[in-house]
Length: 365
Image (cartoon, rainbow, N blue to C red; front, side, top):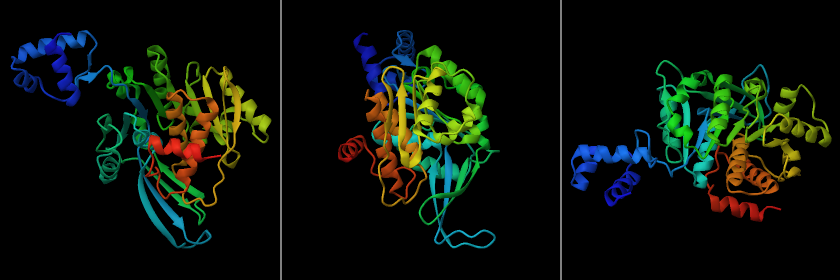
């Protein structure tokens, strides 16, 4: 590159949305000259896409749910058929969004691809999320409602019942994703939750394989396990739990041997790395190179709120894996971040950072 090309890149790095006219005025050149130089930089692979995304900037792209989470906390033991005293809270949630916020707080560059309504719920989510992730890849549909998750929790913070309105995510289609193919093709990693339609998950698996991009699949519930593609060959990670695994394989996991066998079954489908969580029993993690490990859970004296703990687990797994850690360390990071989240009233713990996670791991047995 010549000196002026380097100057253009430096200016774009500071402001990816700077106009060609602004660049021309700063550099003392004509707009056509700047246009020709940008065209040349694009051909060289230094600039990608209409927003001048630099090829060196690799983001984690999270695809799936971005909900309004409403939680009703029981003050006493729940009684059916009558009114129960509660206190209510609401937060921005959604599996993909929660993972994106966790990763953003840790310090990673994250894009969220999702769909929403054009309503007050989305405005609330946008305000709570924009500091930690890029939201320009969220598509709004004025005729639809933003996704919502409503949970009733007992006095110990355990879930009694949950209601989910996820209809808006049916609009996360392969056609929608193709509009963001420039972002996807330059991703450091793709994370997709099963709020997305089955054909979208299949598209993402094929796209990731053809572009040699790691992909992580996150089930959101047992009923949505049927959204997994038939061909899982080449999937980098599956982060799931025992209930979801039992549903997929039509089997029961009663013993540690059953648990291990289930993980081996996942690996036999061509998935590179698998982790199966099992509540207080901890997690089991494995791949064909390093083997399979059982990592105990972290004992917690008081659970304040269970919402978001699974997403905290997944995000810590993804982060430490991208950092090149061993399987036992990866599972431990997930356990630690989940445990810390369970002890807060927030869907995403407010004190999270890369340094804090590392310190928490060092202090954990």
